[in-house]
Image (tube, helix red, strand yellow):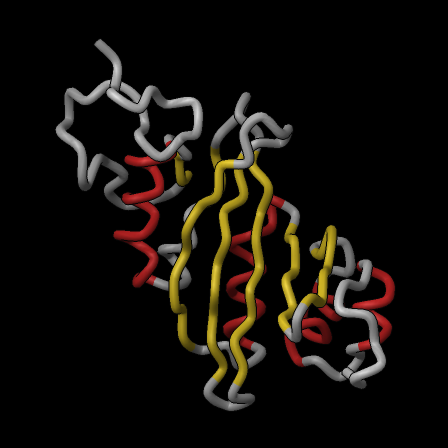
Length: 167
């Protein structure tokens, strides 16, 4: 993007301003409704993906050259609604580029499809998010606590979790 471009752009400006971006091309060619929001801030692109399309989005990105899964994490925006963002990073060695994409998850239904069938390296990251935030990953091969004891009550990285735990 040119240096004169504002640092924060809305979805339409981002999609129009980056027409040759391989991830945007691939996703718009596959399903134009998959991208629900796009931000370009401080030289970094973040795509918000429709929650029910995350696994297919990962397959599409992999086919488009984003061959290396890097990580997945979650952010709790309590008290905002929707509350959680599940944030993914994937790398393309071909394009020498990292893409950030995320899904928004509501507290009333804290579930999202697992991407482990597409990128097996997401296995332990998804288990950690489940354990510490309480977000369930549908289709995960072994979704169980990874850090906290099995009988632990609550999810310690939620912002409404008591500092000293439940008593």
